[in-house]
Amino acid sequence: MQTPEQKTAIAVRVLGIGKRLAPDRFPAHTDRSGNIDRDLVLQWAKALGAKTYPLDLWEEAVEHWVNHIDHGRMATTGEILKAAKAVRQKWEDDPTRREQFKALYEAREAERERQWREGTLATTRGHKPAIQQKPHPIPKNVLNRLQQVAERKRA
Image (cartoon, rainbow, N blue to C red):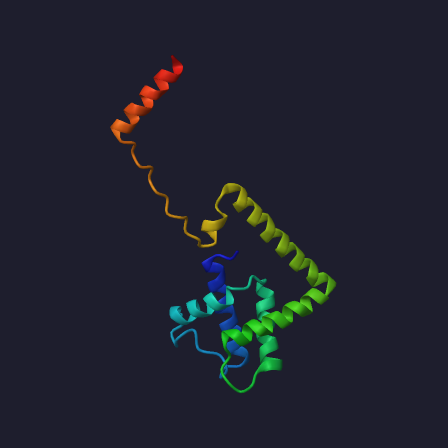
């Protein structure tokens, strides 16, 4: 699972490479003074962060989109995700790149197992614990009656 910082870094990298390769096809993620448009970057980070791919794959996905998919309109996160999926398939067909994915998958599985053992798996993935109700106090008359029954059984 990627941290929000990693997702943001991927979005900035994708937008930066895209803007350099196809300036009129990618939204400007920085202004003239170099300040980052946080809203735009966070939207792209949220969409692209749905997939856990190495940064190199994202870079190649942008190149793939520019060279093979560009249809004369602005790039969308969905199109970049499709390009990333195509590049992933290409990488998985390559024996050396396949090892990168194998290592990535094994690391994710180990992290998932660790979280499972520690009991943090659900909260790490954004699930909220079920509402836990406080135990209702036992009324004194009921408690007294239970104690009387217990004493009779002991006798």
